[in-house]
Length: 480
Image 1: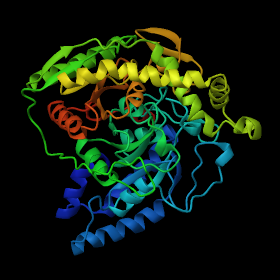
Image 2: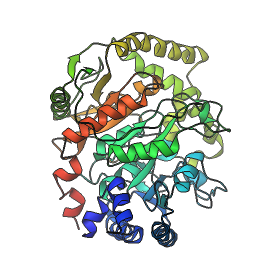
Image 3: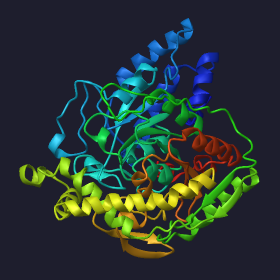
Image 4: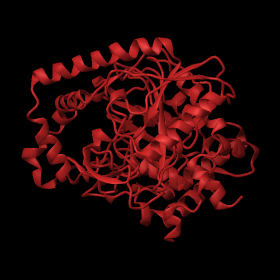
């Protein structure tokens, strides 16, 4: 098997190959490292790497397979988003403020992945404090999309998405407080899962922020499910973690006969690029071919959601780092300063009103999900987001026109952070006019993880040419 074939094995395929000894964990890790060394100068998806340590761990994994004592994710390369604690390593939050911070423990999700045999060989880039749907910072520079180096891989889990698309990891972690798993999943042509709030344990204080989620990212639904099965379940340091543990069945599904699928192309207020619209329509046709009844619906949402989400972020996310405006202003990025300064004007009443807006949204959406098995919409309204996109507004391309827009006008993910108990998975839907992938969000009723995964498994099996297989000559390879 060539190195190019090795690096694009999904985790399920790699585990099978490890068991039948057609490849070893060491061979896979060596291929990942070689790929990383050749590709990283172009995409810049990594912060710190631990290649020597990873090779030693891969040798131990190989011995476990020889003894038959392997664990569920034994030997699979894992890229950890820089936002997570990884014992003995830096967690910079992509900020000059924390460039030398080293953690003395793992986040619980990382503990569970490592205890299941995954091998962390690198940490991945984010924007400073995860504040953008793009991925650049003063500390780490600009992370670029492997499909088109001029474009962003998305954010804030942009390094994880770019690494998966580029073949420099098999599994990756992400966090999602406004779409930070699903934005890069769409932009990079991979799979990203935002679990229902409480399903995956978080560390305080964001464990009590119902917008905030941590979850898996991978190149296949089965890999995402395998990671989710390891990650989920209660933890005694997270009072919000759900007591019941859901095990995701990830066997292939070839029919959705009798299912009812609702969709909205624009959620009521987005302008959607024609190429995204076309890919979404093709994805909906796949659901029809699988036997589902597909119906367009109106959900009664409007742009008032944008103000609501900003006011909520102002009283949670922004408040945790607002003091840095006084203590470390010169170290901050321009977009962090804008975000924090903008948050200062939000009032207590604004916060209460944001909660009321969320209630109103679910007044429409909750009864809808009682009538349908799934709800589908695009993940992003456009793929034309430059690598240097920033707050408060930047030039993006939508329908062949350059427009100056805020992130909330092209990212269609944050409404489902507001409706946080709904599970959402982002799946590839094809390539757009600039060569960057697009995605669809598959949403189910609250806490119904399995329904989302069943729909995604069926869709993936019918959509037999994911973007990373459609065009092996992705842009970065043309520059090598």
